[in-house]
Image 1 (tube, rainbow over the protein chains, first blue to last red):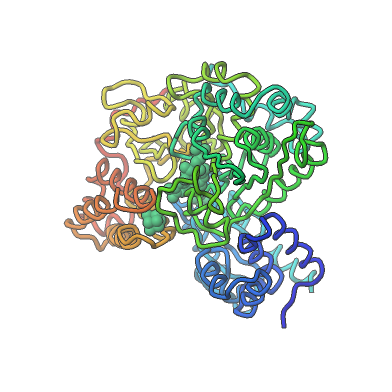
Image 2: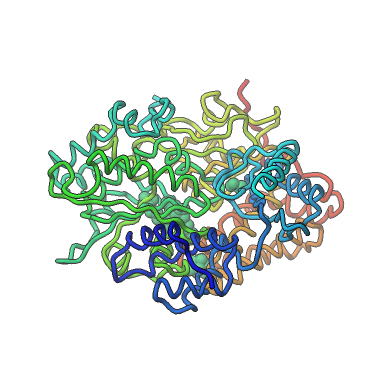
Length: 166
Length: 451
Ligand SMILES: Cc1cc2nc3c(=O)[nH]c(=O)nc-3n(C[C@H](O)[C@H](O)[C@H](O)COP(=O)(O)O)c2cc1C
Ligand code: SF4
Ligand code: FES
């Protein structure tokens, strides 16, 4: 059975306390982010049911939200997810080449994950970094002004970080 | 005037992100002035006098919006700050929050006092995760220094500000979808009326305003509404943040006072610094992806041949036939090597992806537009597709619950209106169109390029 540890539970309580006592459901989006970060980077049915129980709402209320928003992953993703923006302003500055280069370099198309579970490539729509294009989101941060060389460096950094964390 | 700055003047002061520096630079004066010497009603009056128009895209007068809020006895009211910023081309709110977060917090406190909101929420797009930390840090600092919490400055006014992250949905920038999302639901826009001012968050009276709008309340209170209204021109008062991107030398966020010309904005070194790589200007989407694209000639001059300026009235001069809109201030520039069909395709894909799916004209129409545009772009188009595309977009506009439908239809309509020959060329020269772009056509000449 999954369960928040003490730190995660404290964060859960902080999130819920922002809303009126009888409006607990309002915390659903932030709590789903917390759950996704806490339980392997994606939302399993078990995770969603756990969130429903914590917020005292029906599981379906969680599923319908989890399926609506693009940041919730409904299946496992790689340890490092490259979310490359492909909307107009980024396209004008060469995002197609960046996507093609990552594809070539890692052997994965948008939506795919490398066999070792390290990298996922995903194309996304405008992330509010149009002036710093081409760009991608990696975890909590943006990688901007991308070039092929920068992609190489990012991939190397991810590999190193993975080794250091193991 | 050109370079007057009210919001970003201090954005580059070392350490301005932190309270001590912000305060030393004169921060939080507007809260002192408002809570100690003004009533909520007089603040609303000042904002009305300032002529401030909503900076989120629609340009609705902020003071008027505030005066509509219902005040039923015993029912809490809420101010919600819209930091969802997801319109392609727009990244100004991010800049403000990232570099000078206390300005937003300061504006929120004064505005919360004016509206009687004891619990104010900032709804920020989920991808701006690191900015959530910046804002929460600023809120803690403000609270520790007595600007938030109970009985602020002994005024009897209590206020807390909470930051809620979204989770990836452009539609949550629409104010009623945002409210639904804040309530922990899917971001489906509500049918209006009732308007949020009467029944918004948790069915309580609510005002939703853009980040930049709320930050602008700070200089308005400090200098007075009348002084603020003297900046700018006509009904375009004050300063506006423009996020410039695409094929220019200096993409970035600029604060302008709305008296400068479009030409100056593009070519002057103070702003965009001209078109990148020595290319020529082909077209521009001046107010975020949903506003009409304009070819260079209509961008720099109106159809009447007058200089076009960076303000609400001038950008929309000529209506949709020959003008565009200020929108959210997302300024997207295309050089001569860019393909209007492809650019329009990526935007159509964006709107299809972001449609919430509640209304069939939007849900089905955005999908159709994406498919037809993809066919034309990839060499599978028929001449009749152009009229079909026109027909589809015209059936979405005005037939939906929320304006996302219009936002999806307008870019397609404008692209066909001004660049029909480029669409035709794609269809008649299928193979060539896969290898090179159409380039500049007659409509873009003559372009006046300053030396
Ligand atoms: C599809 C759609 C997306 C929107 N996205 C945003 C947004 O990201 N940020 C924003 O401030 N307003 C956005 N708006 C406008 C809001 O509905 C609302 O008008 C605005 O937040 C009001 O604030 P203002 O009066 O200060 O501009 C959007 C509207 C629509 C229809
Ligand atoms: S217009 Fe589109 S986004 Fe807006 S409510 Fe209808 S389907 Fe949803
Ligand atoms: S278009 Fe890529 S960040 Fe806006």
